[in-house]
Length: 118
Length: 380
Image (cartoon, rainbow over all chains, first blue to last red; front, top):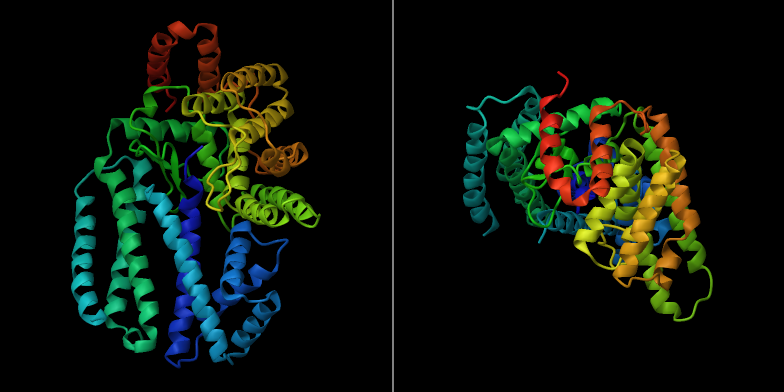
């Protein structure tokens, strides 16, 4: 019956998602070709957002928040995944990933705020 | 500006991180606390590396990477703040109460065949957080004197389930997580059905249904599963503990929040799943006794069901949660609560509630004598 027990582990996961998207953006924005270990966590996250039935509810929720913020239709996420896999990333995709990074960071900051109990 | 600011601020944070390492290095800890101490050390070392990278990595210095650098900086600061306030604070202040309750949780874990390493308990919850699980540190916070009183201790079983639901890549705990996902999907499926029908006040209702879907996907389904785990593990004592907490806190047990940040479902719905689980465990008499007092409590408060509650928490969805949790619990091979369990802590906590209702006026005296027995006769 903890007040906010749920968020403690969830925070770490959202923090990890945020970190992995920023790691990828850091490579993309500096013109470096990202390694597989940088790309695959983000691809996994985006693919999970699309697989509604088997995806943990928290990831679905993040997907909902991202698409409502950036007005990204579900089909567009497949396009982003494809670009990342081919290592042929457009500026539009970088901008959309920046939006995702902001959504994740806001979610992380909100969760931390609730953990603090303020 | 950003470069200058970070070089000053990060320098100070690096020194703070080193001081934290020193603070736990001259103290002897019981073995239950070793994993926490090592986790804290590892976390801080990894943060020190992160801060150094923030200063040294040339990619961060490009103008187009400023937003990434700032986000990384705030994440690292938050992490250091967290590890200091939660992990190190638990280690530096460790006292006899912390050791006693940690040992009690270890004993509970053995009794119920808990599939993970039991968490350390630190008796230092703040006013707003009551019992509070930190899966990343395998740490649990409870209020300062909670270990001295028996009636809320069944809530420890609920907290243990939070660690299971956060566990990944573990075939032993997987069935419980799969059951949880399946139950959550039944709940969101129910709301999706409502969303597809024309309703009066369409726009507001659609918005509410979306918010409730987010709540079901987030906190609500998890809290139900933790309630169910608690009930399946410790039986009627868990139902009484829920009654007790609700009676002490007050509020409308049918009130359905309309914010995606809701942390808990309504208390009536929680009690409903608890009673369902008790019935599954063949505690029908005990379930009836709890239900009867629960109804009386709600009638005393003048609380009644409402349309939001009925839309959001239909009985069939709540029953599905109970069925799924039962199956997941069983598949983890955890021990179910039974009347003749022979498990010391389980029996103590149930006996405490029986004693409370047998003679409420004398309970405080009985509790103090019994608590001493609970702590002193612990098996080695």
